[in-house]
Length: 463
Image 1: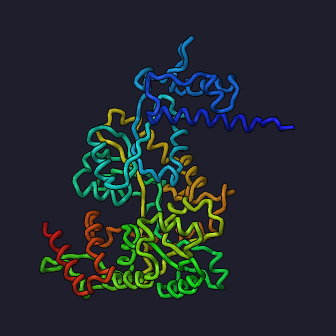
Image 2: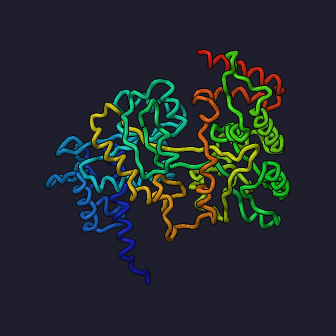
Image 3: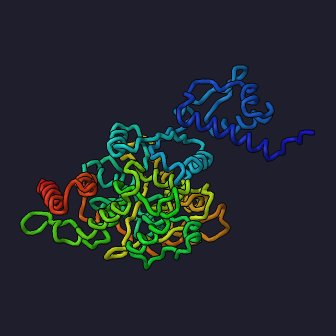
């Protein structure tokens, strides 16, 4: 005899129907003025009774997303009617998972039924160009932005597009002002992360190796990686060197900085920076057994780690969200160090269109996403670190297993630096990376690389 479905199952199906329809309406997949499928069709699609379907549709009516037309059906409401405000929110696709954004937006709309949020995913490639174009043409009211892209917007003169915002005293002080430009706070941090190590504990236990800690130098990691890599089909240590969220770490740890000298040049040869650059090539040489096409971005390394093919990777708290279903225990540790124990700091924030026609609603959304309740939701449902200090340091029953050293970031806060500590602007990052590719591939020696890099940076500084 087949068991009767539980009330919980019905509630889950009902919630699924409401969520799917709400998302279709918010994203524009179902346009204003169109009619939803009939109650009979919805009941069949979601395996619900007609009464359950009606209850779900009543929730959408209360949220002013649909309106009942007697004897006709359920019509998608015009957001401009009945005082409903349409708010367009541009975002990095990864933030859906990294900040539980879809869940937060759903909560916001339930609390603010007069505001409909349309989520607009933007491309990773040329994100600053895309987001500035959208905001400049009033096609977005709110948008996510990371520190690197914000610096590009500011350096290119697009900061005038953004609304100055009030500081939040409840946020970590070291991150709260990172989106400030020319004295104005033009963005507020949502989540942040240091760049760190992530490793497969089972691999270390199997080889009876000590696990990484804050005292490790890069030489110790490379020695451990050689042992770990002896297992067939497994590489000891790998990361995507070409990522602008990876290679600057080694220059930060060198203790050097790109600076103009009295002659108007930017010296590289004979500076501490060279120690960091030599280390990058040494690490690449140690990885020479790996196919050059092993990764195209950071996520490729994370995927191989998830498959158990890599023992240690360079990661972030953001990237841990992609490891949530890992079939093994993984742990985090500070990066090994060169001259100085520093690591790269990453941040994703929110910015508001200064000329938005619905600025009040946009600011309401920002307030909601940065509230203790929303930031606590991020802390409890993701691996990302919310910018709200109290929410980030919440201590309660976890909803899923976390690394035992999950709070490690608190120990290394004094060592965290943004890439701008190197004296580079956002556009310089990619120019320097491109200039280093020949050196990393051993098609150019150290002297030639130094000369070319000095010429490039000196020319850019003179502009």
